[in-house]
Length: 543
Image (tube, rainbow, N blue to C red):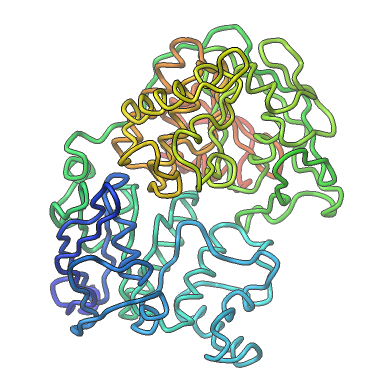
């Protein structure tokens, strides 16, 4: 390890002393102290609502602390906005990327920074120079809408480096990456570190944190509880620091599968020109170099190609796939947001292929969307109104055809208690919650109506290990009572641990299947890139 990358030798790049931030009814940060050394990857971990995002927003100038000081490279700093932080060499890559799909990589990078290197050949040379120096492999003339999630992430990193950042804040950077893409990202981070840059890495994936971080700071309930050395810390110990309990596992081989079909899908096909009946969604794009394109032109390519499967009562069917290979379109067709060109969808034997979304929901379909901001919440509305969302005609929200607001409020309080949604009350807006607490509210809402089928897209994305375990338990308990689940997740351990059956989706087709009891994440990851098809047998090489 080079001296610049050695935590023992690096001088402080960032020092946060006594940082306190209060909001009405809640203290987000309380007397936080953190030191981040130059040329290191410093991980920040904690439960949902622990104050990680607030702290990083303070460091990036998006919010001002009520108390405390910020020191950058030995000099006290005061940030009034992100421009001040950028001027001091700080860049932030948010969990939800901030890119314009209809612009090229070059246009996205220079947008708002035209004064640095112009918008032409000089800017292009600078982008290529940075891309080559840090192994980002970014092509400046490609439209962002044609990039996969891993490439988009590299563009976001390039954007902050282009603006001169020497301190990078990465918020949940591996949340939607497959194992091969995570390895590539960590290679990029090591390149950055080798050049003396400093990375602050926020994540809930503790195994990844231990593999890439030089130091780890743990935050609990808004304050620092300690700093861990990854070389002398286990995942179990780190989890105990975070939540005070042992790290849970999704692993379960208990079989609750019956022979009663709940969801039957036959020959489902969706062509690019198919109708979007609700919430228009752009066509799926491939998410890796291997998943280059669907067959045919944009106008006629098959987003879903002859999809058939059955989920029985008490069964969890897991769908693995690099994002952009048809999973989104499949879910939208099942919930009624897209009209397929052919095929049949049956719920408990009833053909629902042409039923509207509301009718399907009333028929017993629960829905945890992959994009909670777009399809799961009204961010400017209070929590009790979000509890009603999607279930307006169902009890306890409705009585004799009229909304029962008192009952809806009371049930919102129950969901907050049972699902540990960290909030000062039900009148605050959904947008004021952390991402993980937003997710817990959605899961609680969808599980509260006794669904017969749960369509769950990334149900634990962005939640901490304690909340993750609680969500797994709720799903398992409902499965024992006969719940059928379609599970789409980028977390391969979650897919393998929870599923009774696994299928792999690639370019709009189901191309492989696997036994969760024997398949490895590596084997599953290979099938997700199209490298292997058919039944995925366990082999020693894949272990």
